[in-house]
Length: 65
Image 1 (tube, rainbow, N blue to C red):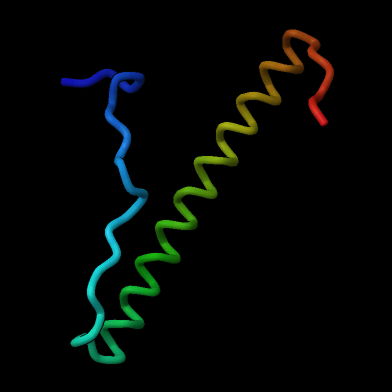
Image 2 (cartoon, helix red, strand yellow; image 1 turned 135 degrees about the vertical axis):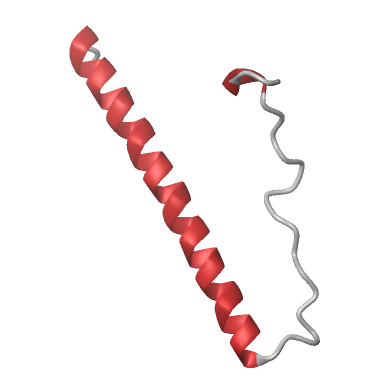
């Protein structure tokens, strides 16, 4: 079992499926899955930024930028 720090990262960010035989409904469903995954990644970014901001405030580190 891997600890969070030890979890292997994927080599590619995602596998590009072959869509040649997909119908329009399958393509739309795939787009919705991608949008859901984007939202999940953006939520994770928000959590990490909030955690960093809280730590910076606690330790009184001037903001980057």
